[in-house]
Length: 166
Image 1 (cartoon, rainbow, N blue to C red):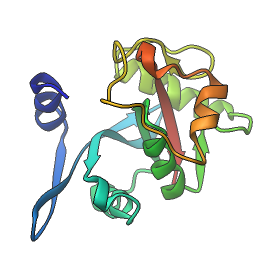
Image 2 (spheres, one colour; image 1 turned 90 degrees about the vertical axis):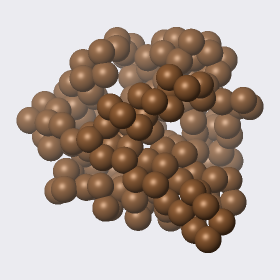
Image 3 (cartoon, rainbow, N blue to C red; image 1 turned 180 degrees about the vertical axis):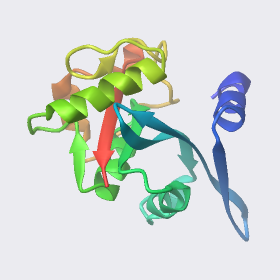
């Protein structure tokens, strides 16, 4: 991430959390609460967790703290690990291999409008990041194949808009 990315992730969200241990800061997470298609929703604006702390439930604990009764948790990502973290946190996750209900499509459309971007029929924002957002392509054993099959091209900067129901 460059300076502008970090600045936007820290200054534009309503809530920013820093997670630390005795070694220092190990996580940063930022969120905005909005109403999307009439549904109270929490947007995960950004989250970064040190590699040694990933997979330990930190995303869920921070998101629990950020939530104020929102039933939909949303994010845009090109990272299969982020998708999996939200999938594990929520009782239902879209897109998935299941049919997307119209109510979820409406939330996703409102999310795209909120983020000022256009999505295709799959919920992908083509070229959102302008290229691979990470130094190396992030992977997750259970999700990376889904991203490829779904048509997310990280190297072209594609982002997937995700809606989870808690």
